[in-house]
Amino acid sequence: MNKFFPKFEEYFIAFLLAAMTAVNVLNVFVRYVLKSNIHWAMEFTVIAFAWLIFLGASWGVKIGAHIGVDTLINFFSDKIKKKYFNNCCYFLHYLWNIYLYWQL
Image (tube, rainbow, N blue to C red; front, side, top):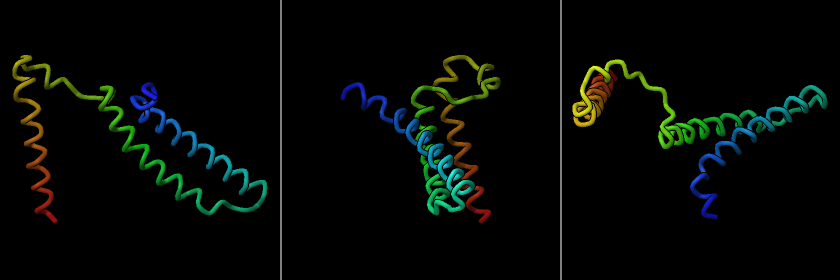
């Protein structure tokens, strides 16, 4: 069990992807060969894909696999990068969200 829980997120993402693929293949078979339809296949695929996005994003943060543009960051020293740059980015993002909120 100790080997399972640290990789649970990874296994669940793989399970969702396999389940989505299996349901879609089965739905195509039922639709074109049996001339019927699995009514819940599209809803399952959309919901599973949404969960796949959320879990995949958190897993990407966990292993550091997200793509980043670091050209601007590399102009600064390591001290400034660690101490100030993240906080400035968070603050600018916060201000941008406030601006967009007031546009509503």
